[in-house]
Image (cartoon, rainbow, N blue to C red; front, side, top):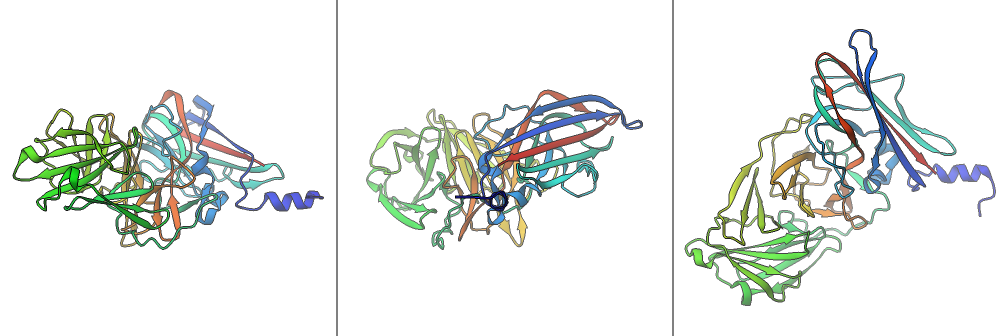
Length: 416
């Protein structure tokens, strides 16, 4: 039993303690570049993404919040609590304690910035950035606080330690959030558990065949929980099939589709949404309606985030899906955090950008054990994430032009 106020203060200042609640407030001012007078002001409260909010390197979420980027994007999408990233193209951003630069990075306000001011009642932050007439121009639909554009290597609050990851090398296979799946030419499915570092196998050769001339790829539809095996025969189109399984026991095929028009000859991560399959390869996404035997379409991703400007994509590494979204979390290679994307299968479109949150080139992507919506890189003894912590879709789009300045403010209050 705590008997003194002094003891209470000692407890609540413990950096990994999860507080009672959190609230965010935003303010965007369009200003006259000469007088500084406010011409238009937009204010509101936001959505706190708790799974990512209480995360940080070594579980120090307070330090992680103090490093977060403020971003202004062109997205007008309704905030989805199951989407842990700020969507859209970045029109402007700010970094704590950094000056402005280029067409996108605003200058932090020295007088108004507050980083982790602690009281007996909680902790508060105030991020404020000033953008010149040449910066952040466009139609702003969303403002957010996020780590998704940095290799933040955040570890989720109340994280679970992991084993040595014997099966880490199976990073480039289809992931359902915990397991990755591979099917051999002989028709044996290997299921790798990246939580417990184990593997089990299921022989499905009686269903999908065992021909050494037929590549076999496992797919997953998160929206339905069903699993798929795509069989490709290069010389005999009639033998190209898509098998549907109710679950990952692969005990029997509940449906089989002739997929003679398939041209997917290589084994890559495969995700399913509705009647369509999506394959990730290099910097391309291929998709096809296998139910109606439609030939695949190739979509090449060439655009880049305005923060990083990099298009060094490698989509065969680190992918996981959630409902209609594919999260390609990027990869880590040669001491560099490579970019990834957020892809919407329902619209067949790129809707957001990320970079790898840490790990190595061979780190698989999973969902955190304690969250259904937090994509992580699973690497040896920890799970790293770098999602958004707070997002606000503006009630009305704010137009910023070269005739105006802009000041963006984001305040966060955490209550014990």
